[in-house]
Image 1 (cartoon, rainbow, N blue to C red):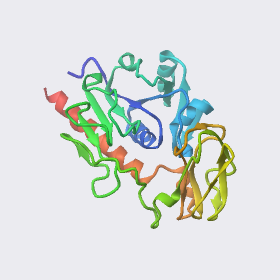
Image 2: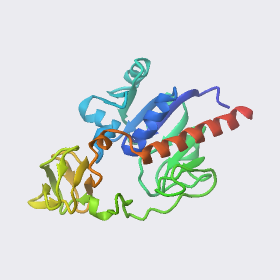
Image 3: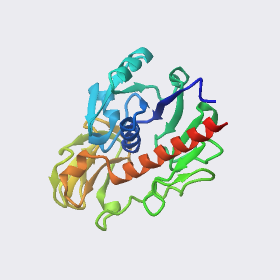
Image 4: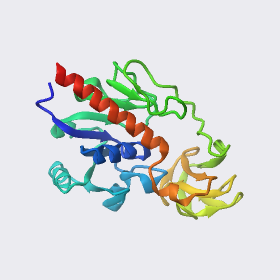
Length: 272
């Protein structure tokens, strides 16, 4: 069953925050990892997202380096150099060429999507939008709480509420959203300390004012085209700068669930 596929190769759809936690965990566990992204990814926690390779050509996060690959052959060379290739391939057109045993959809779309059971021997989805047995073989829970990181082998994860998880008692207050359609202009950087009432950005002349103080943990790219109510940043009221540059506890928990699901289903396939 697994002979026609590269058993230790995993393709990840997406390279945002949750996807990057998965990418790093699998790479450190000895997998060949390939990330597929869109042309202009919008990541909020950019300092911990391998999607930044699309803009910077190369990015290193917690000892794992990702590089932009402009072709299938270039991606294979990057794998040989012990790095993670990031390709602009939002439709996963190159998936069959890589022949991965595992496909992980980590785009966090939170709705029905185009990932299918027949795309790889092991197909794993992250969070809402997936049903194990329907459009993936397993789903990893992404909502914070008792089940965070738990693998679901039949059924669906918790529904998407749209309410940010609380940090030090703050939930919606810690997230910044665009006040209008337009081009984002930022006045701060990730890792900066700010105070309540501080203007951190503007869109089409409308200011974005932080409701609480803390350290900026996420901020979309300056010059990015955004729509009204898009998430453009967040502040961590704990004020610990180190957290801005390391994978979060949530990303690590989800990544652990992915690792479990891969080995569990791989073992089942080898037994057939």
